[in-house]
Length: 293
Image (cartoon, rainbow, N blue to C red; front, side, top):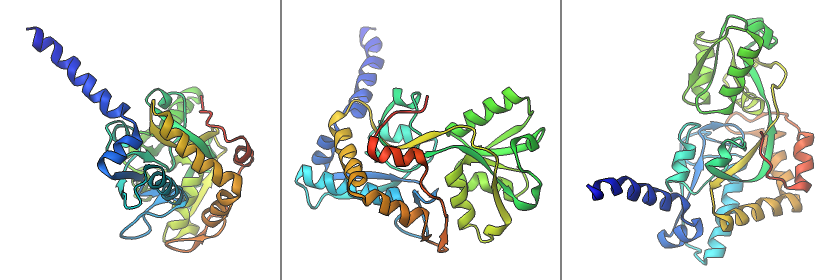
């Protein structure tokens, strides 16, 4: 009987050991670093065609991989890529499937109980992607209507609370990823897709008919994005912060921003025309990892 009682504890300790294992030791032991990517988080991390992902944070991830090779003294280290979604990114990080996720993940205090975050690399707020002929210009126009958002995102919580606070009586559908949530609008199942403004501009730019879409509504909040790391691994956080911090200090980060946010990007050579927010300009100097509340 005692053995049966101890089994769950042993399993729990084993699981904790995987998630708390130091990343650099794990990478050195396995000779493999696994970087996460998103399939439709334009322009941070996305697929522009078959093969390897592209985007600003893909390039930052590659810089992190180069530093890991250097500090582990493994120039031939295998660097693998793993697709993640809003719902599975934290479990896959905690169980060791991926080692770092740099994309469009909000750094907030709730997630901070499970994972760690590097220096904030973007600031955004929830707005709405709508068909231009929909007549929807603001959140008030959504009263009694069906909207979509992506499962496992902070936007779902923000929209649900706003719906309750304002008594809009909206029905909120969730897609498994951003493309799926946008498809709900395209198919007429929802009238608006609520998501981080920059991701909506990216989806609009990559649509076959960008002029058919509008991003409307005031941002409901301001939230930072940051690379996500395993919790209780200060050595690896220090490495990732050093890479991003040096890019911010040297001006390389601003060049990357200009390449992906204010220049034509693949696959359609559309320019998002999205200048850097004051909050991000300030953080190039402050280099804060402060979470949203």
